[in-house]
Length: 183
Image (tube, rainbow, N blue to C red; front, side, top):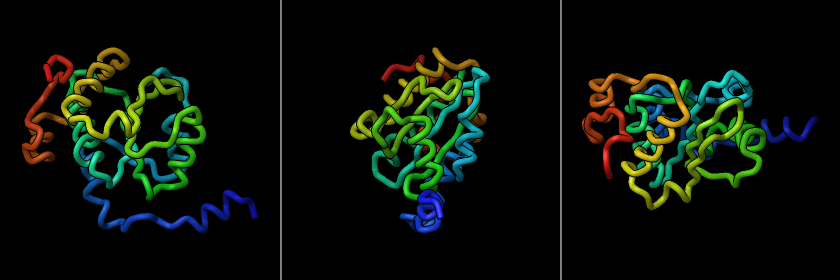
């Protein structure tokens, strides 16, 4: 038996699936699709079509709840957004995260949470935990929107403003074109 198959069989989920579901729902509710397998990761990133692809490693930590997820959600209300939106959950889709980190980010230290923008399978911009922890969501959202405006061509927002307000229960208000707002 190959070592990777042993790892695959013996890997256990770090968290209870029911407990993390609300955290998953925050990103999927604004249009992020989940990457659950290594094959999903390759399908999303192993491409050469010039499309921009956002990948978020979600986490149960406080900096994910207080900064990463809100920042991504607000940034996706920008007038320009990535072509495709994806998420993985740290401690859950271990094989998918291993593929993502080892194949697409081998030159970077593992980080959770993590936000990255890719084009043609290569990172264009990366926010590691150190870029997220201790930083305000609104500031990160503005930085993301600035990157989207520079690197992306897809028309946003990812969901209509009214739906965004409903999904976020008004926590983040209604924003469009975040890069034009000052911190």
